[in-house]
Image 1 (tube, rainbow, N blue to C red):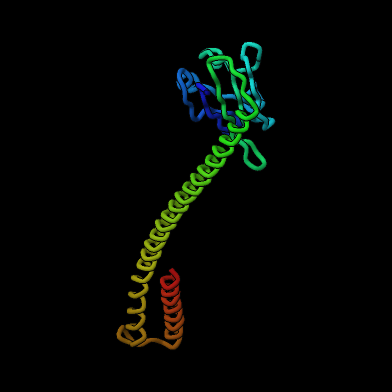
Image 2 (tube, helix red, strand yellow; image 1 turned 90 degrees about the horizontal axis):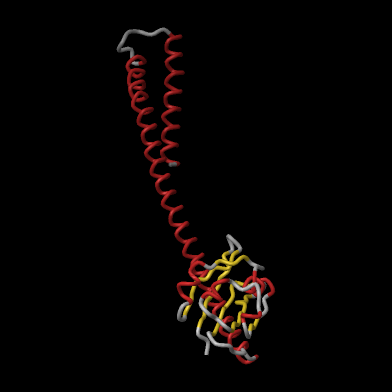
Length: 212
């Protein structure tokens, strides 16, 4: 039976294999600091080539990570976590006594690795969907805040324009009614122009409020 097991997952941002889970005496603390570049050492080669590697005796093998020797592992089997078109990680299984991993052992570990790879991809998809939903919620909240700011701006601007405009229209009515004295034809003509422009501006303010 295997006495150590760890799961290296490929960090796509750094292109490094990082231990994300481990089980077994002595290995949990040892692998916490392990990071391996893709293509580096045996683990990196398994990830790079996508093929299992069996090591019957670590004493006769180079390119192993120092933690293997530190905790006394004697035999190893590395199996890639495969998805269509890419490797997402490597399954490491080891023993503290010399052991030969048979073809049946490798096939069993390959099946376990395939299930793990599928679960990992699904988990990443779920996380990506969760992050997308959170980003969408933040965007919607920002849009609501912008909409409120726009409403406040339009309301403020329309108020600042309409208040003096109302006063102007009131005074125009007084002047055109002759309450401030008789007007000449030319003066009446000028006041009509001002009156038309005031009403045009009033209609424009109504249109802005309607569109907002």
